[in-house]
Length: 124
Image (cartoon, rainbow, N blue to C red; front, side, top):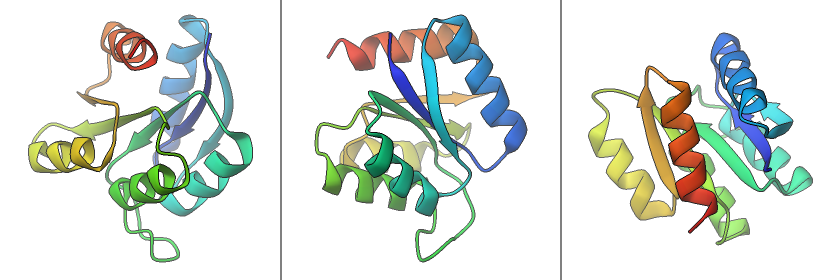
């Protein structure tokens, strides 16, 4: 199973994703609550997969998940990144895919949606 980095500014959402990943047999090896820490942790941990929220606060000039995605893909063009976003941000989803995201999930996050996205992403 995959080693996963979970990134979301909302602690409850990180806990939810971590619990779902555990249920699916994956191992959460790290977490971050902003794009800046996400890029640092990605470089340090080198996870198999990262779940990355699009909308997060600006920290050290990394405005959101899209900026973090750019940094992560620049560091590792083969990075497997699943973007997680709220309904109504279709424009940002299209941008994320064009920037190199492997897949995306719309909130509310459901276990079967997460499982499908992970399987599709890891089996590409």
